[in-house]
Picture 1 (tube, rainbow, N blue to C red):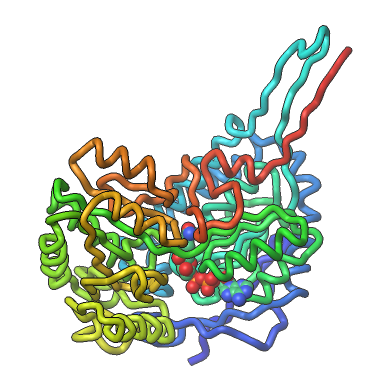
Picture 2: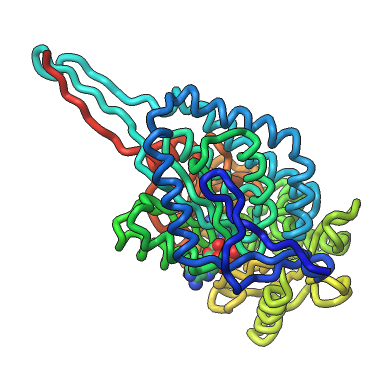
Length: 480
Ligand code: NAD
């Protein structure tokens, strides 16, 4: 049976790009093909950027109060279709329905915060900077912005960007991950229904050729990227070399410190969810748990016991705790890490290769103990349901471990001591920092992004920082 081929949305219309090459999209829970993403290139990028550029002239003059009315309508439509959107996320990504619902909710919250643009876009003013001379600083939109998204949050990640960009008066071109194009198709159908003027929001499907098209296009003002660190670095360097604004959010290796004084039940529940929720395919997932002092055994055994209760299966089925990985090649890559960990001499406590369902890209939760920072499994991003235990003696040792790790996206401490918590939050380098929290998640009203090799750029995503990224500040000095 033929599967649906995705279209682009350019200048307010759905169009079928004239390209031969496609990426076949699978339902990861069954392995069946469900669609084809056209792998567009420079010509399709140019068409979308030109539509966005043409729309910018009048959109930037549209009063912000009018601009946000479209976002209010979009918010209403997203609420109406939230359940459908979550089902699409689960079908193309594999995560469970509750996880998909949560991600849709977080996306909708971005639209809500962007609706505050009339206040958040305000500038500053000061009278009499010299006698009879006044000074004001205003924010103006910049032009055409773009977004390049990863596979793991198909609905939410582009919403980290476009609501803020267009609320500020810019126009936009979105490129979803070629592995999960259907969620953004539905979001863009709702955008169409919300009645945004043609060209304000555009969508181009594809892979690296679309990315490189954005990075080099003279009419693209800025790029927001979310994905792995090697690609983030490429995006950052190339976009910057072409004179663009860029924020590139990369990969992660997140260390979770457990102090012996922690509320152990709470800590282990939270770490377990953090490591194995979304099958470990979260940039904020716990990758390494660091028990400090005497709690090593309690941590390992508590996790082992919880892992034994995980039900792996189709994320759309009720009662399933963990869905499949995104693809066969990605599952093979994670299995290779498990084999590497065994070869490196780590102790395999729970082996997710055993007993996982067949038919889709399933792998059970996996636990290694006795992992060291020199091991590949202890230092590289695995992006799957594999958790490493790396015991140390003191909090200082734990902090030193985290300092050695370049992918400093997130980190947490579990403790009942204010002194330990304060020391940790003060010294840790990961910029998303949790205290008794398993996933220090992106909140729409705060900025979001990692540090060191997890983030290339300076201004982070959403929150107030979005209004800096998406505007140019102009200072006006007047004497009458
Ligand atoms: P990826 O880097 O393979 O792909 C991300 C995007 O870049 C996709 O749209 C893809 O089409 C494009 N791309 C891939 N290779 C490219 C290349 N060589 N040149 C140009 N473009 C290219 O990432 P992924 O596998 O889709 O997503 C998983 C990664 O994303 C993990 O590393 C994860 O940690 C990271 N991630 C980070 C965050 C964050 O907030 N820091 C959030 C989600 C995911």
